[in-house]
Image (cartoon, rainbow, N blue to C red; front, side, top):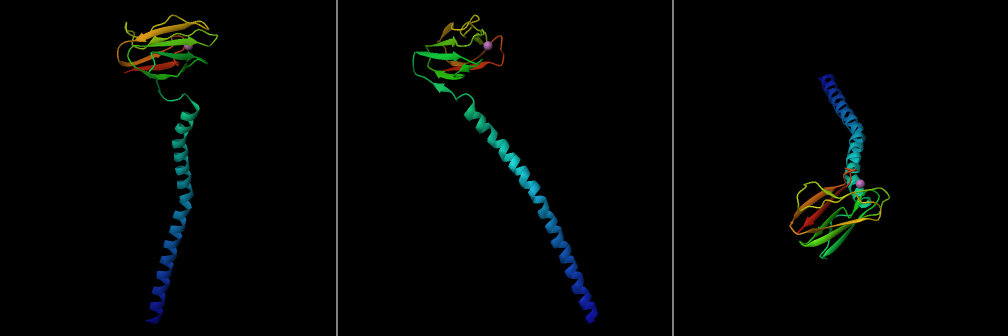
Length: 148
Ligand code: CO
């Protein structure tokens, strides 16, 4: 009976050893989990960095006239918020030609000719709404005028 009791204790100890071993193996997996968590947080951080280094957020203006520069093949500010009746003037500061073409080509939306370096185009926004526009030769150039 004593031997059986001892055998039972040994079995229990072995089972516990296996369980502890399994837990240790489980802990070995944790560094991988931590790495994937780090990758996730890095991915989450990336947009914030891009926000800081790219164009600023929407620029609001109460002025009757607002200037947008076309420089380095980009509209700056890319997004402006103005009141109805505001005249927006785009000036091309690049040596290559750009234009201002509304995505929705209605009569009440901006539509310029190709602007050479130093040339400007003005449009008065009388109707409220969100006007998205682009550059015809460079479709990656995008801008927005929000009229309130
Ligand atoms: Co362009």
